[in-house]
Length: 219
Length: 298
Image (cartoon, rainbow over all chains, first blue to last red; front, side, top):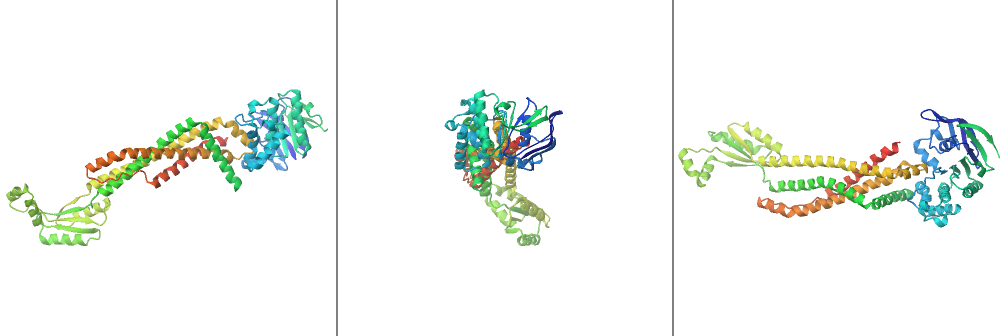
């Protein structure tokens, strides 16, 4: 499903975030990208979602060269990807329901069907009772779950999560990890960038060190 | 199609929500746009009334053709013939020098003076009404008649019409310039209003892009916002113009009636008002589009 073919990413002024990375991720896989802070984990996710373009090599998603996509085509690519951002990017002037609604409004869903999907997504992450709450009124774990609900509401077949358990206590982090496992079990390809691999013990691992691919261990 | 409609409806609703969310800002923006539009609209209204006044007040403009004092009747008849058969002349009134003399004698004070002179000081004359009364025709006819044999003097009776027309032309140019300037001002106003919105909504716009929003999707509510602001400002401007018209009506009618000029003071015609709203919407839209182009480029 995802193929990195000798991918490099260099940020000005000559900082190599990724050097000559090659790997493949099959559809339906669950993969953890691990490494220290600054190892290039986030960059890999950004390259898959066409938020960044590679400076060398090719990133292929379902056979499509993501780095060569026209600007106008990128929105449609992103609609098939669920993104959980490191900083969550929740809108603090909208309640939980409206935050999760946003991707469906963007994709142009009919309002009634969209509302059903939003409630289903909120239910899945255990926030259905809090749909009217503003993000500021939610705990850290709830905010993270809300961000996940927003990522999956469009029923993407690929879920990308950047440090989804950072800043969460162990119990809440385990809770969040369980949600990802559930999505994986229903066939969603899940790619998680994290420094804390203990939460995903049976996932395939891609280890990065200073932008280089170090080893690969299958589970 | 229904999705397209729903998205546009949603964008319009969002624009209205944003307008309603900051009532003071909206009000002040409307004030600025309204005044900017009221000036050319008011000018257009005054101009329209000026033109109406000119039309009503202008009698048929005429040319007076005077023969040289010693011209014989043969020359006079030739000129009369030429004038009567000229294709651009509608009618000719001949004033024989004897008739003029009789008329002048009968009109009081001049009688003694004329008798002292001992001979008829008046030339034969013609009052010519041209077929068309525009300035160019009048001028060219006057030039042509001056060339005729034994014609002493040709006078245009339309000088004041020319002055009024020149004044109205100046007015039209002025209103045109004002429209251009304040239209550009309106674009600048919406540009800045939208730019401020973009700054405050940057996070949301960024996020929408990450979630798969097209440029159109991001642009749409702002374009509606700009257009709605323009139209609402236009309505405000029409209100201002109507208020000005109501307060001007009585004193202006009184003033013109003192000069014996009939003035039926009219507000801005419906077509002009419609045009103004259309223009306002277009300019608001353009301001928003310019503002967003800057944001969406990077």
